[in-house]
Amino acid sequence: MGEVVGRVAEQLPSGLYRVRLDEGGVVMAHIADRMDRNFVRILVGDRVRLERSPSDVGRGRIVEKL
Image (cartoon, rainbow, N blue to C red):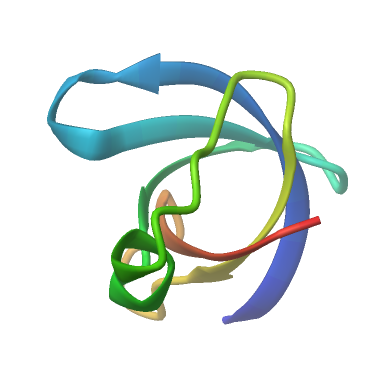
């Protein structure tokens, strides 16, 4: 689906985040391995770039903290 930008709305158990997209809609997302290895912390209110899953548009992967 490509990359989209949004703001973290809620931190959920098991390393999941609820992200509210700038274009509208809500996506459940997890952190990409590259960010997790570099100890990047994501907090509620942070702007992030994420890749949406092509098979399920309600899921995604956070690839960058803006």
